[in-house]
Image (tube, rainbow, N blue to C red):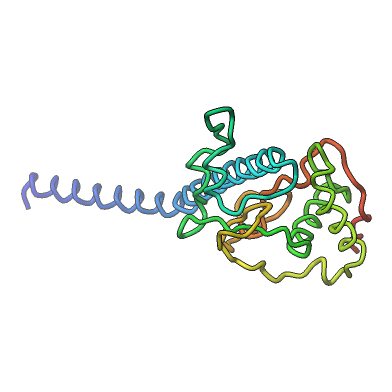
Length: 219
């Protein structure tokens, strides 16, 4: 074997060792990279959901608490401002980064559905449920009913693990949105680690707080 052939063999072996180490490093780094990507998608979903919650609030205030939007398109259209329209929602916000089809689940003002999220917010907030934004009288019809449910439900009902209905139908009044994804999250929203249980709503956003019932003691 000549010196040239020997050198070529050593070079090939060095390349193979390098590629093996490189592949090993990629295998170690892949889960971390994937988690970072997922975290960014979740944070963007939260930002967009919060935008929609704020737009719902502005729409509700403009209509003096008499009506809720029935589609995201209504929020995109904006609100009358003289001869023009005042935009209250960016077009990008209507797409959920976590849902396969990009559509948000519309949360109707049904006490049973809102109560599940309210209970999780309450537990995260040391047993106190934040009040609704001003003027609170616009939201009283929802919070009073909600308080009644939270005061009468059993512990089993409060901890019901069943997923909420994943309907995305338009043309129904809605007071919030949530993702269709049922995946466990990397980040938490009010301590919640499941995409479909993050409800973005103008409820429970005021500076004050309402104590509805003490949190359950963990043995």
